[in-house]
Image (tube, rainbow, N blue to C red; front, side, top):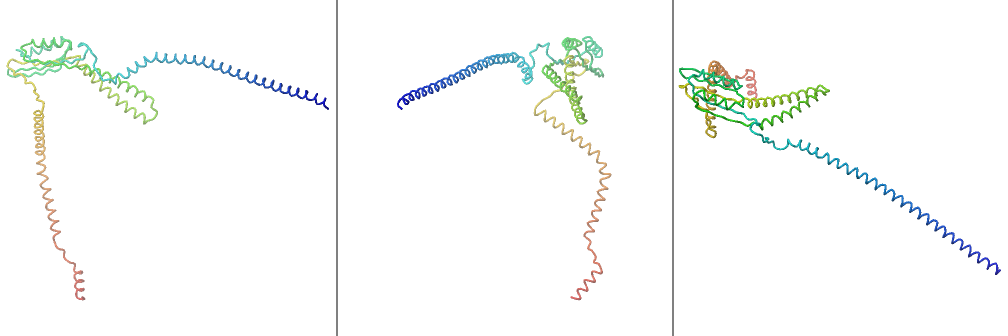
Length: 342
């Protein structure tokens, strides 16, 4: 019994030791497997992160390149935006030299000549030689009081020369020269004409695309309005261009005995307003009296008979209202019988 127990005890310890070693081995193997898996996961994550960083750097290069491209194209865009915003700035006339500006020249002079008819013919020749023409020619003749008033249109470049030549036709009495700079108006009209022309073109394109009758009528009305505005602007531009290209000179040729024309004097202010108001009042009263004088025969011929008829009718109606009414016999008898019964 003792031997068996002695033999059994070492075998049991050995089995216990073997079981313990197996557990440790399994634990170590499992630990190693877990560590290997963790290392593999870390390495894969590092690789993925490296790849992501590499791709991110490439993408960032593309992104950085894109802003550079955008910045490269930003200048033209800003320039274009500046060009678009330019009209919003206050309109200013460009700093041009005198020969590049739009200037209207006007002049008037009075000259005393011995023969008004001959001097008028010479003035016509001067204007024609300068490349101009006669706008108006008004002449009056009397007992030695001959007067000729001529309006000459000559090129602006020959304005001063023509004025000097006209003054040498006789003895110069007076001279008035005026200029008007219309450069800003001309530039403004050019810009407005460009914008209005674009509006007309867009309206015509929309008109060509109209699909219903109502849209067609509305667009035709809108296009007609825009074309009318464009024509008005173009007419103003042509008028300014005509005045700039051809200067106006008004020359008055007087005989030695003719009275000098009196220039129109204007006194602006309260006195001028009072004078104009008084003149308007007198004109209005004259018109009112004229109307009353024209209506007075009609009032007498038709108004008085009508008023007489109206007066007679009204008097008759008033007399009829004041006449007492006569009682009816039946009612009188009924009233009397009722009185007797009572």
